[in-house]
Length: 85
Image (cartoon, rainbow, N blue to C red):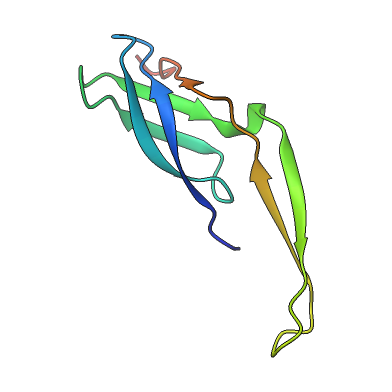
């Protein structure tokens, strides 16, 4: 799988402060992290956002085209409180 990193603004569910997080938009759609300001755990499910599929055709050394699926993310992602809190 091809990695597609993007630095995405995130809003904490608890303190409402916005910070950025480097997200692999072609990777696992489930993220669990902590807020750098208040330390609250949060959960993001990228699967709720639409995806686009891009076909990359390579001619030199790799004749097989590859499809890359990436998430179309909002300007600021709103986090959710984890279920276990």
